[in-house]
Image (cartoon, helix red, strand yellow):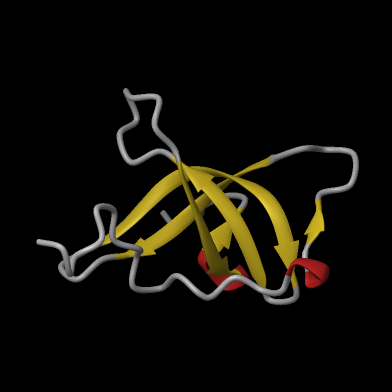
Length: 89
């Protein structure tokens, strides 16, 4: 379908800030995180790398297929990105 993007964005993606509002990570090029992606029928937690930041937003690089080499870049709210997940036992 021409109306559907080839790779739809997660429902919780946010618009990219203006380039002058973004900042690369200081001396580290990327930081490993866990990103929450919200899709129409489910919520997915994926390993990702933060590549840039802006106030309240982060640009994450993630892999739609963990066994493939293709990557995606998505701006998310900083509340949808965590360095770790903890569960009570």
